[in-house]
Length: 130
Image 1 (tube, rainbow, N blue to C red):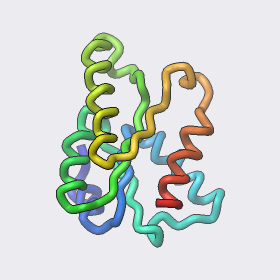
Image 2 (cartoon, rainbow, N blue to C red; image 1 turned 135 degrees about the vertical axis):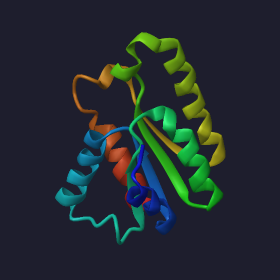
Image 3 (cartoon, rainbow, N blue to C red; image 1 turned 90 degrees about the vertical axis):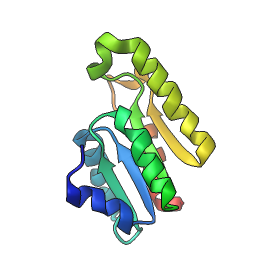
Image 4 (cartoon, helix red, strand yellow; image 1 turned 30 degrees about the horizontal axis):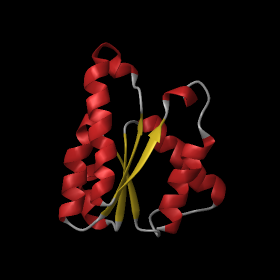
């Protein structure tokens, strides 16, 4: 889960992007550097929640404080390999968050071997344009 310092970021931002892991965050921070952006001045926090099953609770927290929120996750994660039915149910629950003004970025199974540039670009567009 998040450390206290990381969790505090959610209260001092206008929008928050929840990601599953450090690799996803690094990809987005690399885009920030390459494009000459500054997510802090854009009032954006990227929080690593460690497991997509933690996302709904953080979404609820952000929405309770009227913070715009997006979630970015992989459709199929190795962690869930032996629990695919549970993962499918969780994926459905995450997709349903869109009904509550949550932006969803789900990297599909067929794009796993090669980084999905459209996924990255869509997330960066949300960060910079909303």
